[in-house]
Length: 386
Image (cartoon, rainbow, N blue to C red; front, side):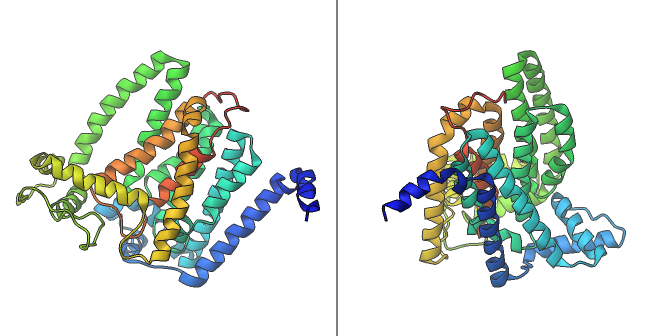
């Protein structure tokens, strides 16, 4: 028994070789995918029917309008599956392949940032075997590609170190990711903040120009959103007036202090302002409840074992992240702003709408949190310039 630790110590480099780590990660990832596919197969949900309808309209030569345009990139993926005759199994296979690419990018990013193969392996293993994340690969929903593309883009952004050529090369990936889901545009906002922070450390004049241009663009965006978010405003009104915390679940609500009503046929941002300002205390109570259920990811209707698994997994993620966050900020300020702002912007959006029924909204944030958790080894690495 005493010989085993000595053997392991002497052969640590062999056991922790990059090739062996990737082999174990690949096999464990594949096992999880097989088990999930065996249990769920190809899952087509209610939301899936919207994307399928959009794809069929494209087949007929029509580009549909309306709310589903916010999911245009995924609808095009469904369209390509239709016209190629490969079916939805091919979409799931694509999602699994892209998810593995994201796993590799996370492993490589943490390895390069921290210089620790063991740390990179642990972080990637948590991501690759997480039920909360990998589950979405079996669904004909936007979550899987959204989760994966965010991580892939974050790694390429880190590798680019703001180099124009590589950034131009990954621009199509950014556009694709932004058009996967309505909250995809938050990724573009986080990228702008990345450039501002990067420029602030290299050329403050350029940073000030970026800040000014961003302010002007933000005003323009508000005008655009004000006339193109009728569906969002409708969702907000229904959930807010009902005190709904979890979308579609009436077993957990918060009652307003005042009798809130809104009968006007108005679907602009002014509705959001008027309802919030009518009872600010109620808004904050409701928003904090949504924040809690977003980041705890527990649900009253889950089994006890499921909730315990979620709490255990997230406890590890949050502990690792908060232990490393200050070092990450010091060594990678721009990258941290990109990841951190994306997490917080999504949280803010949830706080004024509602959290999801099944963990869909937290799943895309787990990858960025794990990247911060893997982060930077304070004693070994110099600042990477971004």
